[in-house]
Image (cartoon, rainbow, N blue to C red; front, top):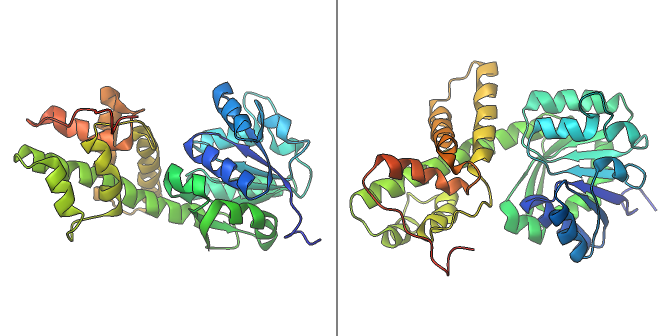
Length: 312
């Protein structure tokens, strides 16, 4: 067998909404997957779906040739791979030649530095942020914005095929994948904030929110985020599929990268302020559509209440 057809053992760290979906999609594609999460409930849920689970990333090292990280931020990536407070991480225990597929949204500079450090440990890195949400993760139809060496792509082939409908190869080293993901997150955050502001405007003028949604989704002002997130507002359901605090993090990375490049981004900055305000008001762990609650607190309109059909 070639490296592309051999089935490696996959370790997936981070069984949240996206990670759980991807792990289950890999199982259904016939891959041998070991899940890992600090939440015992998440591990139990993965085991109930037919997978194996462990509580510590270090337990993956003895069995896994490929490790997929679906964690929240760069700090968690570094803690999992390189350890914290003097304790060693997963990377130093992996066999030489193993592959790390890093899926979190991180600064391009962090991705480049991580590749250098892992290559020094004889490990490969695929810089591979993901987009598409929990539903597409579960169906194996994510978009992967990736960059890395040819060797990394060969080792990642079966994993990527199980995770994604679209795999964009954006460069032969780490950095370009994370750069394109930042552009995506810039637009996603701005569009969610704009959708919330537009709905706040309409409701403040006395327009029925369901009618407004129907009109806009059939008009030029529509966006994917408007169409996807406004139903959460209409149902009064702020169960977090992607939380407000995710966009506080991601738009901060966008803003910091802009400063590094000396590129002014006032639109991203405005959206960041709205998400930061929502987080500061106590909505950080709610769905990102809860950014509309900032407008509601400052305005004179009422938001739709939760209902049994909409709220989960």
